[in-house]
Amino acid sequence: MKPKNKKNIVIFASGSGSNAQRLLEHFEHHPEIRVAALFSNNPKAYALKRAETFHVPAFLFSRDEFYNTDKVLEQIQQFEPDLIVLAGFLWLVPQNLLRAFPNRIINIHPALLPKYGGKGMHGINVHAAVIQAQEPESGITIHYINEEYDKGEFILQERCPVQPTDTPEELAARVLQLEHQHLPLIVEKLLLQESQL
Figure 1: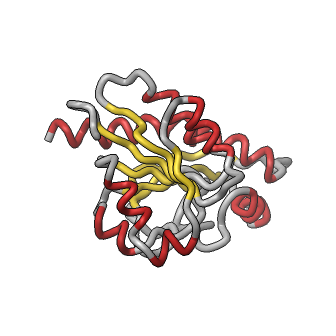
Figure 2: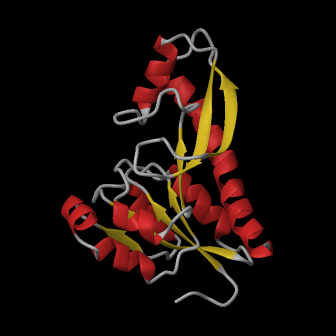
């Protein structure tokens, strides 16, 4: 059930969940927005522990449940989400979720789309590809989700330089700082803007 006058966020994460952590921290005592639940497809995802620490319900699901049933959709609907945030979630979102939450699912990608997006372009792979191509800059893209990997409408892009001596890990750390800085603010802006319309 939704507390009166609070907007609900549901987070999806597949791994460590440092962006999930930033959202949990940012909205822990927020007067208008709360993280209502966290979902993961990975039993080893540290994101599940992060949710537990903040007393946020966490759910684990299988590939079969996600793609071949409405179980995950029904669990999400219990939380009446105003926004679903993919924070390091690696699977393509199925049609039943896209239909149920049009323009309410956003993703953060650790590169300047449309370059360095698509299947397999996640984590260190992205940063290695950016360095190999000798790009002068990289950054983040926050975008809406559609039925293709990394193809939804952009909400925000922020940039950072790629240094000539960067390793993929060094670039990853610089990009992650941008993610942590901007994701909570964009989520907040999207939700508060909506309530003022």
